Image 1 (cartoon, rainbow, N blue to C red):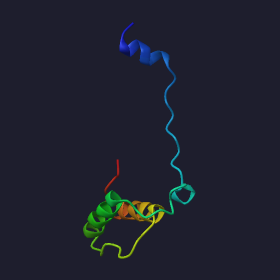
Image 2 (image 1 turned 135 degrees about the vertical axis):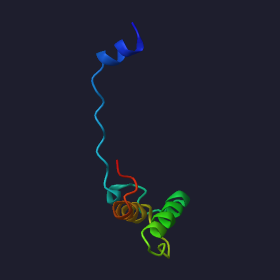
Image 3 (image 1 turned 60 degrees about the horizontal axis):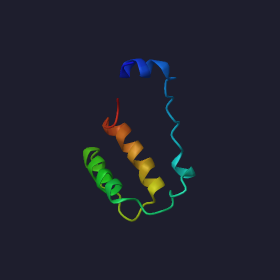
Image 4 (image 1 turned 90 degrees about the horizontal axis):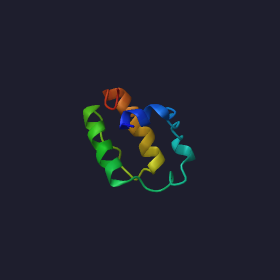
Length: 76
């Protein structure tokens, strides 16, 4: 049996729904370095200033989504 035969015998994997950042168990922790860097890049592309002050992981995630929508980044 080939690898493709094995794949056809399994059910298709269903994507997991994204969890709302407000529901993250670590959402209230400070944003990560990669989040801060990406926010800076997105803000620059959107013609805005990067957020000043410390954001939480959840706040940073929401802002990233917002800026991605405005800049077209992250769109399929």
